[in-house]
Length: 311
Image (cartoon, rainbow, N blue to C red; front, side, top):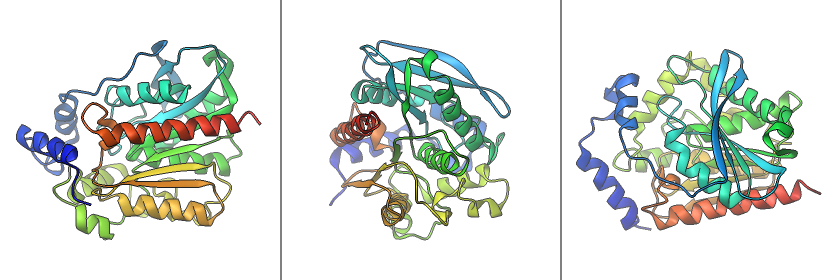
């Protein structure tokens, strides 16, 4: 279908801001520009607080969101996007609040170290350590250890998928769901969605090349399933998944391909491609109707997975 008018309005606002192309910037300058943008607000939660999680290279900052009600609660370990280079806890604050209230769960948002200062595999290992920590410290978080999920958007969804693979390969922690919103699953810039949508729709092909070049230590890392989950030879015995993509996103095809791989391997997986949408729409709750629809779909999938975790 045509580009959604609300998504088109967002693109025009960004173009009017006159920001230089991401791939022409240093990581430090790209972060400064991105962090100067206003962030979407989210609903009130019972409480939120910052903490630190032990990781393989030292303490990892995290933010915990607690829903209203009585625990122990299910939990979503959430990894923010930003191409492994420019994300922050604040950028995903609104989304985490929506997932906390709509999913009826504690959300632990993980501020893993960023590339290029921290290249693969350190960010992925920190994200795995965070999931382990949440499961191991469930009582102190008022969390039910039987109902822990992972999720994220874009590079964060890449990390969530990697954590699910690691948890299977390393004997835990047990996970009940993976929420993958327009996930990066492969370093392949020749898919039809890259060719069709690689310029003019917020996320560009040149930006994705820039992100990958900063994240990987060597080209060979692109064959590692913990960096590119679509490269995994076996995706069976993984937690059920919801994979969300956007029609005008260069990452659309690799997200769909990963969902199909999961389905073919017998993993209970639902795939939703939102027509007329662009990369990043999931976080545009205040401006885009379909963002609110997608968040509600994600919350519904979480609630269902958490209910099944009680059986």
